[in-house]
Image: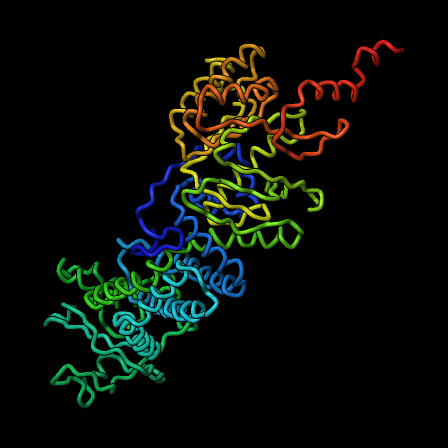
Length: 573
């Protein structure tokens, strides 16, 4: 969830999520799409997590679709939010907030932090104005707008704005500080403290009177400890010989300020700081910061605690939602880019308890958009899942588009449930609890069990994991053995799938399996399997699918004729 329960990805915390496996994510080509969305590894990881964690809760899908519609349609809103979040993220990553909290914070660091908090306040105000757009319709963004308004109108935020404004004003007026040093009868420093913080700098005078002159002059030794500004100030510049420490010690006569002195005990050393004697003017600022921090230790801690409290309100709660907004924004940029190139997209419609659990019209494989130069080359298909078509046995020519269609259906569900517009002209569906894939494994994963053994073990686990609410996609499963052995395993697997009523597409070269669907339907009852064919026209691949009987070995004949290896063609010469 987002900040204190506020989220634009999750309507509430009641939905149950199941994570899609990394192999399924890869099988669907989602990793390629995520790489196209962003080059930022952190963003890709987050987007992958959102897409991979699936829920059958239709309201979650609708909630996300509403937010995505606002982000996609309101391009100026998207642009402004992106700019604001980039500012927040930059300040969070590289500003004073990145400083480790256990480090002791100096006064100058805290004053700099005031500027950053002022920027955060301005971001909140700008975001509030941005979200006031009356065209916003989604529950997620309306809820976020109410959250921002709540922060803005909260008395704590109002006090923060007032405090920061006053502190910034006062901090900007600091031009000098007056330091007092207490000494004992041997003129050794016993303690030091801050007398005043001044809005005006000390004025430069010619040559500073030496300490003896100061003591002998009228009123040289005062009866009280109030600063009256009568003592003259000597400005140290680079043209003068000696370091600030040396001038302070020798010119003013405060020899006891050195912590190395024989007469300075440990207690005194704790209250004073050595002057820098090696870097000249460059170290003067750092020296005075040490002095200031030591004398203002309590004030610094109080200011730090106050700012930390405000940071939680102004920064942390809002910045937690940056990844969620980024998720929608990256997809919106992607869809906008490919829509302008001529590719078709539509908002998906999630339904509950429908007799038809998927109806996809004019859909295509989104992954093709990454490699096809001309959107006009895309082939569209129609397909539905219902009580008469729960399992499809998809057959067709090699390289005819079987895997492309299988993958495309998985992408429709994955992106629709992520709230993203899908690659179709219309898509209505009942959400799945997860997508399971059984694609050929890499060679190195089959060494111990062999290819067929690995396929069987993996399918058994997939079957145990999937439910009647899942989507199961099989790609040439059990094809690594002889036809007889593969067909026996495949037939039993399909019958088991029908019994469990899992929405399935099984693309295979085993045409006999598709030809036996009627017999398998009679044996299982309830859910039904259908033969789905990638059509060919005179040996040319159309990449169009339709529910029909398998075309048998005619594909092998087409391939043989294409490459001249029929008996007649081989023996004619």
